[in-house]
Image 1 (cartoon, rainbow, N blue to C red):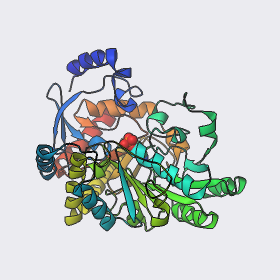
Image 2 (image 1 turned 90 degrees about the horizontal axis):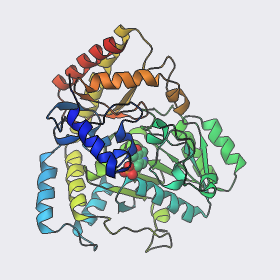
Image 3 (image 1 turned 120 degrees about the vertical axis):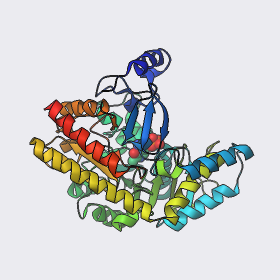
Image 4 (image 1 turned 90 degrees about the vertical axis):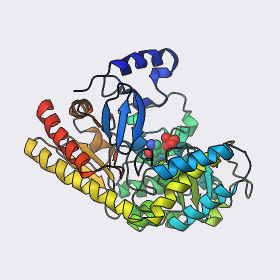
Length: 430
Ligand code: PMP
């Protein structure tokens, strides 16, 4: 069984100079307890901590490392680019290639702007939707996470849910009042909000397959209904594909589910592990973005050549070998079936939600279809489950409010080892 003495020492030191010892809250293991593991290197499907202990990785840096860590073509491309230049703050051909490649892979993107994170992508997309419609309010779903910009930190998922933060200090009432929320998968509630605020709502933003309250699957008709409502009311439908994009299909959730968005946001896979996000969409909407239009949006390091090279190389690999995503889905189904068998034999209530290469387990006796049902699951049991697996070298997200992400470097042996470890862990936690 693994121990964490070196991580403990580093965590104590980190807390002297970094808030909570981490640069992003979920990393602190605050809700699961214990010491966050400090890592040193990663190859393929494996992470190695500062004590040299090996973990099978089910986080994949929260999505980006879809073909595994240290994917050679990406590493080589980064090395070559660094020799040439790390940043210009001026246009490059790589940015043009990146925009063209994305347009060739993804539906409904005529124009696309690169940014440095999923947060920036979502906050910019919302600003564009507001600028385009001249309306202020928007609808988001409880438990969905669209980054940490002010308007989104209302009933948000991910770390905000993990730490049970109801109202985020620092967000003004003005910002919060323009955020309308309702339950994911509840189309009738969306209809009600739209009637109550007729002509005031600029956009609906949604994670098509949600990953920030565990993995939650859209019920048939839900996303189709959002599309219809947006068309009827002149509202912009924003698909937040920061998790789904280039993972659920080359064209993301739009392609996989066959539903058109007006604006789409990307992050994670698009940067292959470098800090990249993007927002794009239909030409008449995106034409409001500066310098074409008056909706200002900018970034010193946006379209950074090293980050672009990394993302471009990974996206090209996915496009040139479409079987990779098919294989990844097959591996996820293999894992799901194996987990299902050991969980069934264990005999306590559980729910596995899986879509493409996103999967999560909730300890619940009812279907998990939205934030309320995710939050009603046995979170204390999840925490014990997490630690039992961690000390057996299986690295899961440290919260029930997060999806697991598979990467294609995982082998059948890795998946079998994981299923065995889950069986042992369930026996241990009872
Ligand atoms: N949208 C979604 C769906 C996300 O999952 C995340 C981050 N997990 C974000 C936006 C924000 O991205 P970032 O952390 O890169 O700012």
